[in-house]
Figure: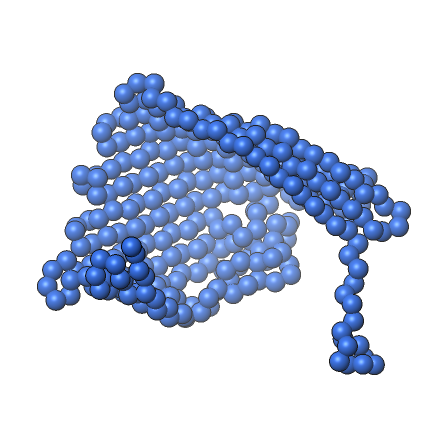
Length: 306
């Protein structure tokens, strides 16, 4: 806004760069039964990214680049019994890095590979499902600080994430439904120009846990009424991927819910989230800011299904 003519807005600053990306992809996947119990899953994704980088600063140049990639996916699953299955899969990933390097060109694309093995079990005649998996994800060409000029980046970093996922979902009785999950994640830097190997990645908790129970009346005057409650725990997280970073505290939040099925088409909902109005930090943007989690919230809704 002008100091001389307060009613007049001044034009904003002229941008110094302009980035344009044009992605394109095609994907094919199929599953083949090799035997009655053994299945093979295969897929391939063809990707192309085109980048235009225009610089309006004196002494700098604009450029155009394109990246192509073929990222496969392969998996095997085997039914040990009618209710227990094991599986393993591996995949590759590809993601372009945005921005310009100190030498005036673009960066190599970020490449990743993942491995996972797990098991699935169904109990109580299919009413209860348990999934467990361990995995490892590795990425290279992650942007890191240019050792010659810290105001620029180079695609030379590497990170790794590995962990365990456990999920339980099912109907323990016709009225009682339960959903629970646990995750352990070890996410760290493995190679960088400035960060120590083992530095934690920002905003990723080492452990998380959640549990939700819902009871729905099946008979009598309360038929169609559902009541539930649950909670979630989130471990400490690094607020920044740095050698010395602030840490966001762990937190636990509890929720309550209720619903009533008026008929087969209409459902009324009432949710009370963060029952105890717990104050916590949901995430951070480096050393710039940490954003708070939602306070106690009441939500009322109606759903209609055809």
